Image (tube, rainbow, N blue to C red; front, top):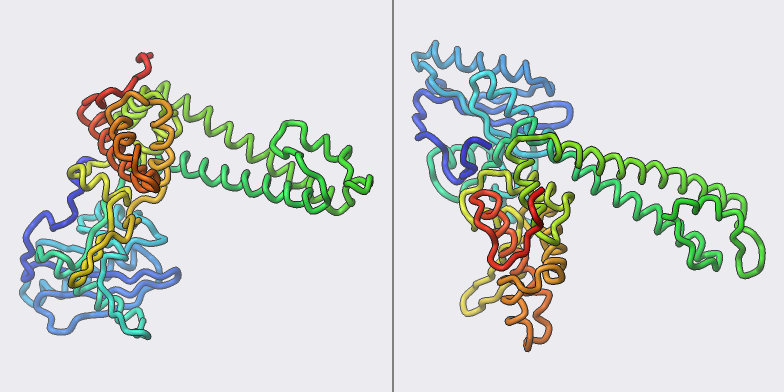
Length: 385
């Protein structure tokens, strides 16, 4: 993104006398909108249908009420929680002169009562308190999510669709194997090209063919598997075509990252679209976004680590831990691989814990590589095409 993704504080100081502040509790069928209108003692609360035009008209009406009360409005700011609706509303409001913000839902403190009350009205009050505190620049009230462009959101779809299709392929293969093992048939590989043709020749240990209903189910599964495999191949071909013809900065990052031996084009695209193309503040922000930071516990004399925070992007975290194991195979002479071996050589049971530390260091090194061009120490690179 063009702007920095430092969302720890607002970009401008709050002048509450000329700022209209709104929060929206969004539902599937209706939205509850609360406002803080200068010059108006009451805090209006309005329930609307899930319609962006109605929301815009309501905000403009509140602005007119404030100006009628002698408080000209120079800034309109609105916030809602990140959720199913994504970021389209923030972009739509931003194009109409309204400063829109998206709040991380997990960043808002809630009551720890065993059965705390939960209503939309209470949620809007909680959102308003958190948003006001953030607008004043007070730390700890809430965190904001960076609003991506439509192109940035669309760039993530191929890798996410590929992840979904691979999961579906694995489920179909496992289900097919389980159905056959239940009949005593082992060693059959449903992923082979001619697997469907071989089904009729399979025999159980009793010497009988597969029962008709199970055979029909297997044929349907094979048909679905063929479609999924063709779609996975289409995504791979389209990825290579984009990489060959695109000249924008993210695709240049992908080409640069794919030069690292051990990083494939699929992994490079996932890392760039999910994290490396974002304008993150520093290396700590990069590690925190991936959820590769620790969660310390300290109470009185008790101090220990609870493990990974797991608050960031799970796709990046899973991909980096897998790549860290692969990195040790392909980059044995690199500085990071030597660092890992030195700390796990004589330490029993530390390999899994240290692989997370290696994944964090690797992500930071790759971030520096694609943003500043600083080559990782000792890492072998492919020759540029």
